Length: 427
Image (tube, rainbow, N blue to C red; front, side):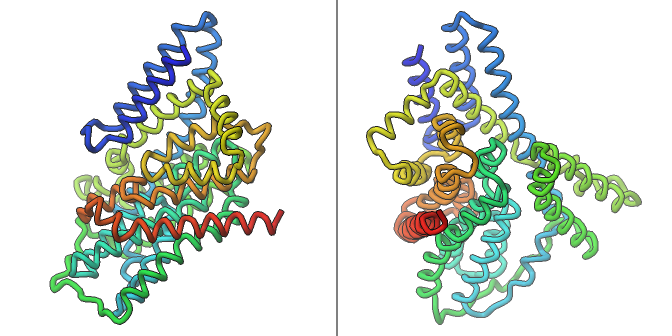
């Protein structure tokens, strides 16, 4: 049975990693893999009650992540529908490329920490089209945006899905991850940002002759500000909600979603249905990336079978024996996430190492949050932010390898070094 489980998982994992050349959506591979793994496990085990109980436990933890992501993604869609992000982006004004690079990098970093790296990348790369006329300059900016978005998402529990998984799973706490990983994430951004800004020094910003600012429906400034600050306020308040009430984060985000929905309906209650339909939460729910949600569900359920059959625990023991150093193991996991999706990598690590040996806020979990969150920047296909930028600006894989991968790698290693030194000094 164990051999069959490993073979099926490896095939499913390979199909996920090769999504683009195979032209098969990774969600399909994850769901088929999860179904086959649980089927093999159930057919090979006499205790069907135990398998059912374990599946129920796995479904409960998976559903919490899915509900949380659904709520957060919907809130972001509502803010975007109201053109709320113009509150930030319209304030970006400079005539020098180097200054613009610093502004864009820093704004992306902090916006990603509040929203998520995928949404932030889409917003910022789209903005560059209105500011920069030259395609080669936009490519450089897109590369730095990917690095900044991934670095910014790693240090908050709501900025990157892998950090969210660790937070909801109880491996990290919100305040501790923010204080522990913030400095390494800053270093991860500043190193490539400084190099790129130096290369671009002295070059002026060449703006497009015709800038199209209309994003569809017109909303008033009051409506944009209300939905922007309400949406961000809800997202920021979720960690506080969990700390104060000790209730799971998904309930906080659903509670906040209800508040945003209520306020939106009140603001638009006197408008015609045809006009306000695209501004409602119901429409936002139809626009969220359900394919990604289904992928998370499938891969987490697939990894759960390896956890329940102790395959991951045995793998952790072998890694500890062969490599011996926990920091090197996590560093390698982060670099591997540039090639394959970081969600199954982190899910596997959560199953490999139990919280009895590695309690909440242990070095392992904090360093994993940093490495898995930022390591994907090394290749354009290594993160959702990279794939989004690749699609928006038609970035060539090998162009990214030549121009951006080296910057991302030195930023990743510098941030990792900063974390290890910081941990040694503080402990």
